[in-house]
Length: 194
Image (cartoon, rainbow, N blue to C red; front, side, top):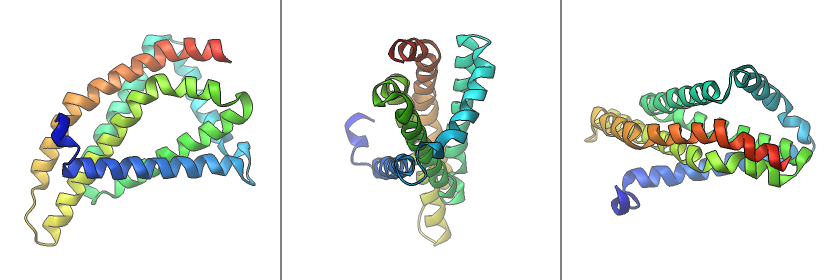
């Protein structure tokens, strides 16, 4: 997968997914900078804090397990639901980009950008690309379904099998590592920067 990936059809879908996520995150962030102000993301943060608080009281291992299972199920669903002609992966990427942008804008207004980046980067540098790759795989499946519908040669089943292989070989381990970092390391880093 190393060098051939960068010129493959999957790579083009991955680049599109990265761009879509980035634009959505910028829109979410800009929402907190405009007339709505940082309050625009308060409900998102409150819901997240309630969930993490309820689980976090059980310790970092329980938090890691919850994060991993949540992320693994969502990433798998995005790959499988590529059969929606890519609509579900598209919505997933846009919504997650908006939420990330809202959260960054809202928290940055409170504590500044440094602690926000320290809270996101350690696990996000692994987690976000894994999610975006899952969405790109969903787009790959959706593209095959579309080609089949219009009568062109395509094998959605083969694309799904290939996608699941990548999911189990690359995405799932990445999400496990990211969840461990998010549960065990990120709290220590955030605690020292706030």
